[in-house]
Structure formats: C-alpha cells, structure tokens
Length: 122
Image (cartoon, rainbow, N blue to C red; front, side, top):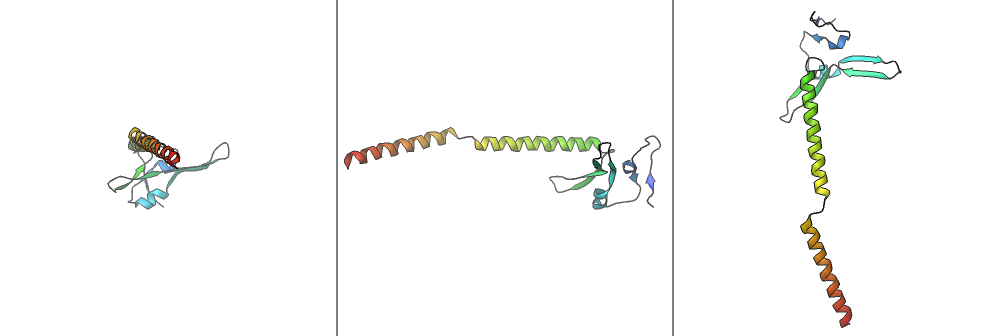
C-alpha cells in the first residue's frame, strides 16, 4: 500500500489530493485521479490529480491540481492568450490586402479595355 504524506494543517476529503512521498514518473502521475465518482445527476466525474504540461522548451511537468493550482491557472491563461493571438493572425490573413485589390482591379480594367478593342477591330 502506498504511504501518503498528509499535512495535518490541510486535511482533505479526496484521497487524490494527497501527494505521495515516493517518487513517481510523469506517466504514473498522469494516470492518477483525484475524483472518480458519479455526481448527483448521474454524470461520471473524473478529475486528474496531476495536469501534465509540455513547455515550449520541451520540458514536461506534472502539476498537482491543489499544490500547483496557481501555476496551472497561469499556464491556462497563457495558452488562452496564445490562442487569441493565433485567431487574430488568422483573421488578418483572411482580409484582403488593399494593394492586391487595386492590382486586381487594374488587371480587370486592362482586360476589359483590350477585349473592347479586339471586338471593335474584328
């Protein structure tokens, strides 16, 4: 049986909130569940004990959902901001460049003028 380090100042109702004393791999931490129950509506609720994040530099960390809650919130906030930046870039790329519009209209005007000349000649 696994021994748990329980801080008496912070009692917990969920066994998954407790951090084990023994060393675990990130894969083992990723499999742990803090809550695995059915709620009052009958929905099956599963809350992971650790959230696994891979940072841009390639480092992977398993953050405990209670102990590291502030860092998890910061990472989620950063991901949300990056997502907004990506969406803004996509919107910019969908808008037509004014220079391209002028160029396209110029080509269309030249085509219409030459076609009118060709019709008049033949």
